[in-house]
Amino acid sequence: MSKYSLYIDGDLISSDRYFDVINPATEEIVAQAPYASSAQVDAAIQAAHKAFPSWTKDESSRSVALKLAAEAIRKRSEDIAKLITLEQGRPIHFAIGEVAGAAATLEHYANFDLPPLLPLRSDSEKFVAIERRALGVVAAITPWNVPIILLILKVAPALKAGNTVVIKPSEFTPLSTLLLGEVLNGIFPAGVLNIISGDGEVGAQLSQHHLVKKITFTGSVATGKKLYAGAASDVKRLTLELGGNDAAIVLDDADPKAIAEKIFWGAFWNSGQICFAIKRVYVHERIFPQLLEALIERAKAARVGNGFEKDVELGPITNAIQFEKVKYFVADALKHGAKIHTGGAALAGPGYFYPPTIVTGVGEGVALVDEEQFGPVLPIIPFSDEKDAIRQANASPFGLGASVWTADAQRGLAVVRQLDVGLAWVNQHGDIHPGAPKGGFKWSGLGYEGGLRGYEEFSELQVVNAALN
Ligand code: ADP
Image 1 (cartoon, protein in one colour):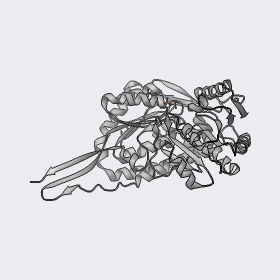
Image 2 (image 1 turned 120 degrees about the vertical axis):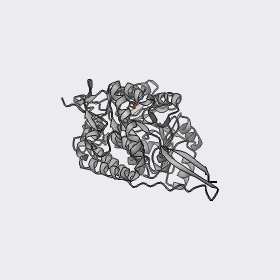
Image 3 (image 1 turned 180 degrees about the horizontal axis):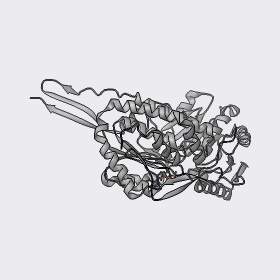
Image 4 (image 1 turned 90 degrees about the horizontal axis):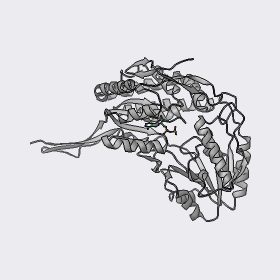
């Protein structure tokens, strides 16, 4: 059984304890990941702390290192992508796309220059200026749904801004991240980038360490709230990218046949395991039957299977816990009078396969509509009054994304601007502009990732104010 290594202070090292990583398509063990001991968590943080002063001084070598990291990842793209498919389940062509996106993100930050901050005052009496200072050691804690791109979206700006990092991937998908230790070995000075693995306890130890100055986290609302509370005692900086319950509102003038394919992918890409997947669809009653029919037809045609098989569109649910949750949401919906039009039961094993499932007959008060299912089960809800559809979409503690579908983009913009979300789309769902900050309203997050605003979360502003005579 192959065993992966931790990456601490420039060394690939073993651990006393390992855990199995399961392939969700076969339920077989892919390999073993090291469970970082408490001393190893501390060593990784100490190494990052020690590496910080010289790393933060030398901005030009940071750009060079990020470019080299992009090249190194491209060279090993196939190996990294294979591991993503093995541990996460996504079809291999999507995994290759994820790795390409990670390399492009590293390059983007290598070339990223902040607009200079001009002095507020500079004359014979006074010099007053705002300057940026990196924070120090950043803890990057990541989830299992899109392990590499979500990691690089944190690590690339953190490093470019002059911080050092300790990374903790999800215990369900640690291997692709641990492989980066090997792929990037030698590119960054020892201690600048460290990778430890383990479960939530390892994450908790990392996030509470006194030398960690910032936590950047993507994951569940429950864990995000714990991190928020835990960060208070030390006033640690925090960026939280949490869950969502994105609504798609389809207005009466939309063309059901034309939009069904896009709504299908907006909801079911990665088997629905995306924070900003469409998780409920509100459709004007005039076109409800046609859109429902088109979505059922598309879902029935979906090719679900092992991500290494040719032409597979949707892989398995990534882990047994999430698989059980998906089954629970469907069982609960049925108890509340739901009608299942296609799917609705797990496929015969092995593997955590659940086909795309279209549900009607549910609304507010049912878990499938009110909570985040994070799986391939989509409730379709009719409406007659646009205002009420907007009210229902906003009646959620989440506020990540939403989309409005219509023949008239201006009308769509007017509606989407009334939705309380950080990502507001018209006639599409999920497109992320490279320069845009991504963040959620309400429980969906705190702070931003990406864009200038996201980048600035990796530094403090220091105002220097000198009396010159
Ligand atoms: P999910 O339900 O998507 O697995 P989690 O929020 O549990 O989401 O996990 C996201 C990441 O947070 C994982 O790397 C996990 O190990 C880590 N984690 C879980 N609990 C804690 C915690 N209390 N403190 C820090 N990290 C944690």
